[in-house]
Image (cartoon, rainbow, N blue to C red; front, side):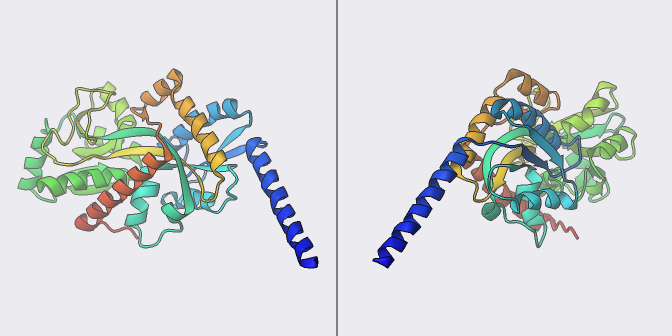
Amino acid sequence: MRRIVFTLLLLGAALAASIADAQAQGSYPTRPIHLIAPYAPGGIADIAARLVGQKLTEALGQQVVVENRPGANGFLGVTAVTRAQPDGYTLLVATTGDVTINPVLFKHTPYDVQRDLVPITMLSDTPTVLATNAASPYKTVADVIAAAKKNPGNIAIGSPGIGSVNQLAFEWMGLGTGAKLLHVPYKGGAPAATALAGGEIPLALLAISSVTPFLQNNRVRVLAVTTAKRSSFNPEWPTLQESGAPDVDVSNWTALFAPAGTPQPIVDKLHHAVVEILGIPDIRERFAAGGAVVVPTTAAELDARIKRETAAFKTIVDKADIHVE
């Protein structure tokens, strides 16, 4: 009899906990949500977090607080989210680099994307561009490839840093065409763009937002975009694939994640709210101003893209022998 009573008590406690948990999920959120951007203000993760966070505050009726946690190639911010309680109150806006490049670039990372994070939806997608100084002799991608083959390893190309998606884009171009460029890493896209506009380097692979100010005063020109499709920002720019660099398809995107273990009803509620936000014309226009397009996806579509790009970037990192200390 005692055993039966004890079992019933356990079942009752479990049922009560389940009901309480369901009620908590149903009323979510009941307090502020923290949206972690693992980079400094002004980058694509920060911009995406602030644009979406503002509207998410309105949609959910609770304040969404954007927190910048820069440092260690995004490791600090991402790790903070993976170690947070999986209750929907700490979320991550990650970039391409955080979830597809870092895991293959570094021997040891403090997180495992598949194990520690739950994908919710992609947010934005921004092509990068191969640009040249206005006074350089390069008018087309073919000019760059020919010059790099003639003088392998002697023609400088700038990027925001070693192991950046920008570097992987031109390394991919080189692997497919036999063009070997001299990588000159800078501490961010802005200084690399300034160096390009000033003639310090003849070429750079940068975000559209980084080169836009110098396009307006005709100090740089774009030779190609790195995505498989042309950019809506300027459809006249050809793609690298169209310009003789086979298979290259690289962009810098952002996506929303939650810690592993976050209840599915909360994930679903966030997904529904964010997808609706990405459909707002004003939000689409504000992303477009920086060369980005909004890309609402299902969690499965985001997960598939992560796996596909991780495999592609691993091949590039291995073949190009890219090392990061």
